[in-house]
Image (cartoon, rainbow, N blue to C red; front, side, top):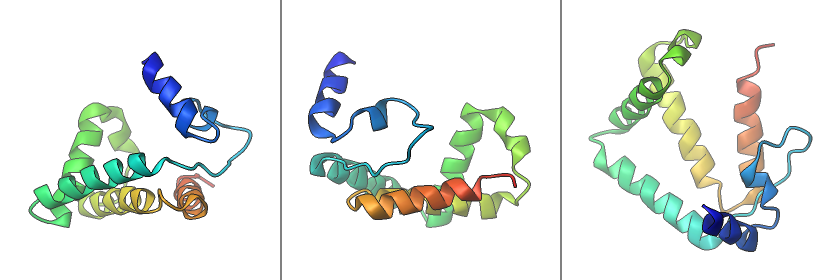
Length: 117
């Protein structure tokens, strides 16, 4: 774990942005190119391993609620719609990893969609 933290500090402009929850500022995060390539590659493998985007979304939905069943009561939207939203949200974040400003905007947008105003 120490090696991972040292590598993160070496590669990231501000490693604290990825090591702890930031609740005072919301800065752009720049990922090293090899991290972006690896994440996008693994995501592509995941998507291509599913029989459809719907199946990929369903797999994410199921794994989320298997890991945290108590969250399921927070979702009132039909399962098929929610699975598509989860898939699309993750896809947007991973797609924007190489462009810090787009990543920040995508993350902010998803965050604001989760506010209960």
